[in-house]
Amino acid sequence: MSAPLDGRTRVAVQLGKAASWLSRAAGRGSGAIIGGRVALALEPRALERLTSGRRVILVTGTNGKTTTTRMITEALGARGEIATNATGANMPDGHVAALMNKPKAGYAVLEVDEMHLDQVAEQAHPAMLVLLNLSRDQLDRVGEIRTVEQRIRKVVEANPNAVVVANADDPFIVSAAQSAKDVEWVAMGSSWRGDSASCPRCGHHIDTSTTEWHCTCGLRRPTPGWTFDGDTVTAPDGTKLELNLQLPGAFNRGNAAVALATAYRQGVRFQDIVMKLNQVSSVDGRYRDVNVNGRKARLLLAKNPASWLASLDLISDGDRPMVLVVNSREADGFDVSWLWDVHFEQLLGRRVVVAGGRAADLSVRLKYADVPHTVVKDSVAAIQSLPPGDVDVLANYTAFRDLVAKVGSEK
Ligand SMILES: [Zn+2]
Image (cartoon, rainbow, N blue to C red):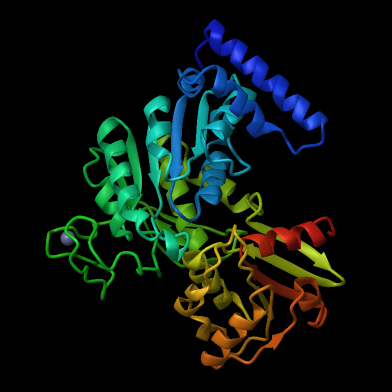
């Protein structure tokens, strides 16, 4: 149970809620962030006050944190009410908003932007830290990864009693987590090693020629306690658990393995966790099923190179036609040279349509991959150019957002 709030925080929360209500009433979105921002302006330690007495789990990483946060929240559902920032507002104002809306929740499961983990952990005193991966959001941000790794490492060192759940396949995460006293290593898998070629510890080249990656300085893949093979997750005690997820792809099976490890450490029974994970079907803004004139389209957001790689792995699920949509507005990053790092060759044999503001670049890339395709610049028209039936649509940030805005309400 959360601790009672002091007078100042109580006022800050009330004014934050009032601001949130006003923002909603003025038709400016959900107002949640505004409320959090107001409360923080009045009480800079609001996050500490609001997490006091609650069991806090912080989830961070470049990819999969919204999905994993949702999965952990579902898996812990039986343990009582949970405060969580389900909308992906993953900075302190979003956390404060989530916490003040659930004052009685004994648990807080918070997705945290990797650049803000230190700031949040300093106030939230986490019981668990869930560390997924560190890869580049955009090529132009590549220099930040080392800094972020060092900051996460400091968080691990500053919270020696926190149980850490960490990805054994990501050298940057291993470097950040390896000093933890109590760590659950999960073999989440990683097809993206572009950022990890040089060691976060010594700068030398990491040998990633086998799964057991290692560096001459001694940094190496720890032996994971949690592994998965297809739909089967193996726990540290050897228990085999069969997943039947509604969310597609190996990437989500990795996220599910992390959620399993996390909820298990909170005392939830295996079979209860698996049942809950299997029920998760859509995650705010990341997965969406829509109907477009008789085409049942499964929309997937892939906002950076790593998530394009991870999302393309789901094509092994079948031979549905595929629409790829890439924009390069400010929120996407203007540079689309990452298209050359994604293995579009895997699409060979599928019917492919390319769309979006950078359809022409995508088309050139697919020509080099020898993947036949058509170009239909408008994304809705691209879906409609296919025969009625199931379609997979993979889109980057603004492309996904625009599509949901246009067809998201049609079920
Ligand atoms: Zn090294």
